[in-house]
Length: 382
Ligand code: P1T
Image (cartoon, rainbow, N blue to C red; front, side, top):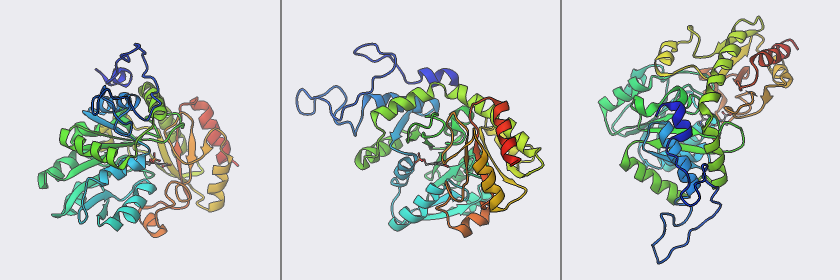
């Protein structure tokens, strides 16, 4: 199946009892057994629920994996990956990450004896140079949140596996989605999503996903998902599955509108630096072109006037771009990373990589392009 068919049919079949084309929302916590341990494949719903199974099969199909897992949030999916490790193990992570990921690494898992080294994933050797005998996981986000940096998934996977094939490569594919890039095909072991974003696509749920293609890794993840219990509920699973069915159509429009907004901002006299991997001037444009089908709907930028007043004035005056955390829904959002998505990163760390108070991040939705540009123009002219 091609990708545009997989979003609709991947891992799906009509429900057995009734032929329902969409899986019912199995709003149940448990399933009857005819004799102890004898049931129809479902025991207690923390272990599995048929609505969640349908979604997990869809996750696996669209990411070219064999096993998918749905969690109660993106953070709980990341938490599950880290629970694969043991105290004393080390993780190499990109230096630009969603603020909550950075917070989980440095404030939660450091307490349990994991060590984290943050490197600029622009260069493969930055990653391989950081490997030591305790390194067990490389954590990649690409494009990164919020600076839109690009890491070469294939080159990093190959180089890391050459040093030690046991080191796991995990890619947070939230910004790109499998419509644009499929990390498992590029050599990664684990794909992670905040399914809250483009996969769900309608800003109506919080959910995380993990997808793998190795049976042993799948067993380990399933054990943690069941034992720790941060599962997606049936209603949210239904909504996410429904969202995925239009992922390809939405992403196409997100990419078109994202390009239009990036170019508009780049040519606007009041706008300073624009971060968008589709620009030839982006430092990793060639890698983005190689590993992504298009460049997505996320654009970050500074105004030329970097004062707090000018930045806040812009953010307070957009109408179609709602000022809010999150991204990836059908509606356009504007986010101020230092007070919102990246507030949990200490200022000195943020400043080292350029996440300053004047940075603005746009999640470009699928509205009419002309309306979106008009909205930005009027907000820039306030
Ligand atoms: O919010 P949650 O579903 O738990 O996902 C966390 C997460 C993980 N990875 C990336 C790349 C993310 O962007 C997020 C959540 N991000 C936001 C809420 C935000 O506004 O950036």
